[in-house]
Length: 196
Image (cartoon, rainbow, N blue to C red; front, side, top):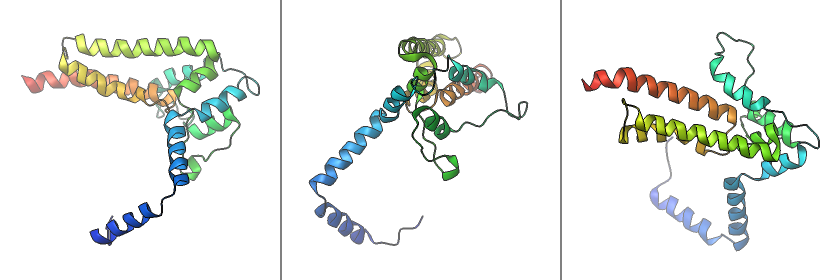
């Protein structure tokens, strides 16, 4: 990307935009920001759509998330493609832009636990998920090949993917499995040779 506008021109435009800013624009922008970072709009729509229009899935989304990393497409060519927007439309009743339009709009793993297990079961699933994340952290911090600060750093880099509440459980689980395996292999076989 090449910027053809001078620094002075850019600053003048910024000043003009600030001068033209109205209180309503700030209020609308703040509201949009809160709605985006809280990620509750689609979850709210899911709460009113499931189970009234569609039944709970009984763990189907979570089971797919757990098995998908172990079914490589080269061996399972009929494995479905992950399209978050299709899932969002299905479970909210709200038509959103799809991958064919260059968008991927996810419900997030919390809403997907609700779709799978209902309002009480989702809490148990989230508790179990948190326990798994804690185990991963503890394992790498205490493992003889990565004990201490190295293990903590590796664990935090692996667990970062789970902090995105807007990510699908399918993508989070796949990312965790791939990251744990990669970290384990590197720490077990490559790092000892490099340090020797």
